[in-house]
Length: 115
Image 1 (cartoon, rainbow, N blue to C red):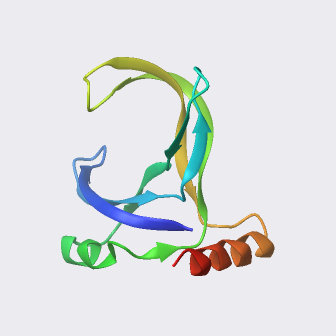
Image 2 (cartoon, rainbow, N blue to C red; image 1 turned 45 degrees about the vertical axis):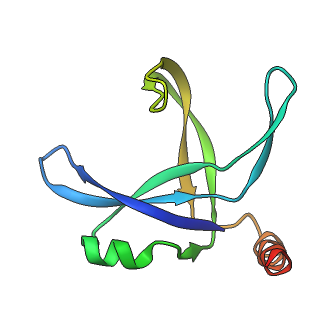
């Protein structure tokens, strides 16, 4: 499952404005290079043809699917919190299709137990 967290206004290559929904995946446990464990969640944006009002109304809505990591050509990324410029060779994309029906069912059961 993914959750719509917010939205941002963007401009396409032809100068036209549109809204992109910011979606966040489930909690993940990650081990750092130094061996420490921390929690994170993958985030990405998905273009939409919705106006601001509709985007606002969708915040908090959960959708089936997941956010997957995809390898890509290396590019520079500026870390918003520190301003540090780093090189990345991956991006994230929303995949609306669960791997299997079992994955979708167990994901929903876990949510029910957590609440």
